[in-house]
Image (tube, rainbow over all chains, first blue to last red; front, side, top):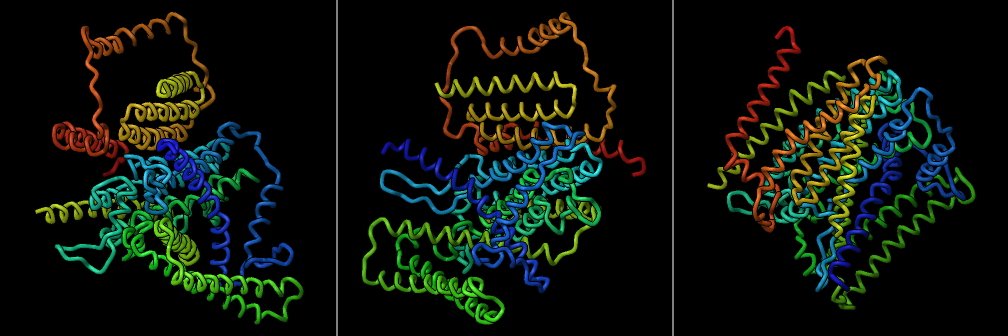
Length: 435
Length: 167
């Protein structure tokens, strides 16, 4: 195949994948939020919606949500500025889906004459692209607040956009420190550098070369700023239910509200991807560099199979135990569901064991090592992203909300000076190291 | 060929948004058209391989300055009579167009396109990249750069002094 055509198809496919990824994360994230809040507050959480008796731990509630939101009356207030009122939710959703394009999912695979990339867009400006796209997200909030032609939504829009602008500064400065350490702006280069071991004064430390170890303060600032950017608790003043009616999207109903809701969650998914990529090594498996994984396919296979055995086994065991406890509560399919799922989990574990045994007998085909390494790396990135998704939920349901003046003071009087100090210290250390 | 097509589409978008900026009576609509114009301009920069400038155009102008402009417009409390469409006579329009082209764009064109042969130099591979621009800014143009930052600092301090009665 022509090299040009191959690259074109590769980029097109990866663009679709990276566009669908946050969309696929959204229902999972909403489920995680509901179940997580239930666990933290010692409740059971959603468990009623079912399809043929299958409840999938409340996951089916997402379908109920979609049907509810689609069935609601789609109101456009007569006093609203119609064009901009309709533009706002689309703007929010579009902007929230774009930044993922520069995130690499795995190291590129060399296929002889072609190279298969797992990154949709490898711009020369790299991470600055993400910053510029996220800075456009404010317009969705401002537009929604203003075009609704409603005092409360304007107030909500103003305070939430003021918050987003304030924290964008510290966020950008935190990234600058990282760029100084890694000597580059391209995301694939940053992730590649993070695959090495941390070296200090010529010695290799038993830690990966991750941003969180090189820039702990920068990581903290970035994390807090991304909570503020996504309008999440403890900074969810955009829709502080006890003070404002519902923030900037008070006049939005039905699908238009759903778009704002999805944009919020997809922003969080993007933030999780960004934090994992910039500060936690992205797709890099700690202590296993890409070359090591490609050269030792047994290791990658072992990692994959261990994940299957432990994950599948644990899942199956827990579900079986729960189903056994609740045997008397339900009848029919509802009673059988946990056992079916447990069988599935045990089946995956068994399959992993079988593959592991088979790998000792059959030798690897020549293309397998690279693809196995890519699979391991994707799963590693997924694990990191899921952890940060959980962190978002965890913080929301355990922290009280900041007051508005506290939020602004924190942003301007603490985070910004801290970010500048971080830059100064980073620069001095880099200069000393050079000499 | 493809580059020319993209260029004309972007240029048309830029001109269209520019016209919208001055023909809308609603200030928010004008400001948002300006965001669109900045977007088209950034795409034009990107087409010319100046990727850093393109990103800065979006990051600073569309994402930063225009947000502030919209903030100010929203908080200005404009009344209906302020938003009446302005009438422009054909003569005024013609005169201002002549002035813009004759006094501003004309000299620029004359300076950029001198008589005689025009040398087209091939772009280096790292043209317009963040490294090249950064190197130039912090070596050859360090003094103007620092002067600019001083100017901005003075503007910030001035704004603070003006807005705060009691310091």
